[in-house]
Length: 113
Image 1 (cartoon, helix red, strand yellow):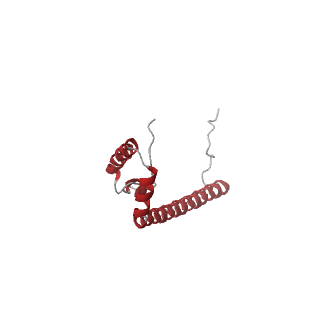
Image 2 (tube, one colour; image 1 turned 90 degrees about the vertical axis):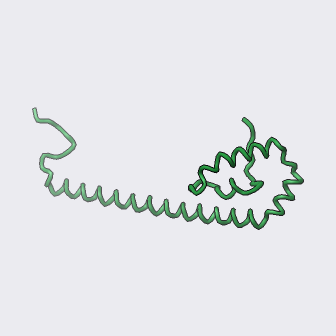
Image 3 (cartoon, rainbow, N blue to C red; image 1 turned 90 degrees about the horizontal axis):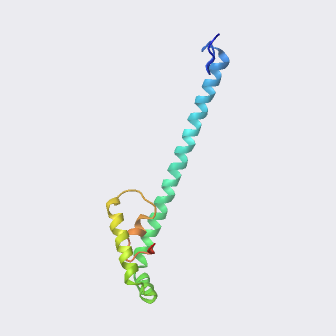
């Protein structure tokens, strides 16, 4: 009985070689698409982070006035301070929403679970 496998008996068979080359071309094309998508996502994230950082600085007084009216509770401020402390070791890492998480009096509020 002859063993059966996924490879043909003749690895130099023109049809098999063509299929291998097609597969390699497709893998390379897929890799390039994934790289382009990752690059675009990084650009979008950087743009959003820049906008968030710019507006949080420019609107600092307005945000403070709104926070004063909203009367953010001490517990919420304590939770946010704990969240900022949790984020501190990750400074410099690319994480979603980084400028907002570290903005003084930032807009991200945590609820106790």
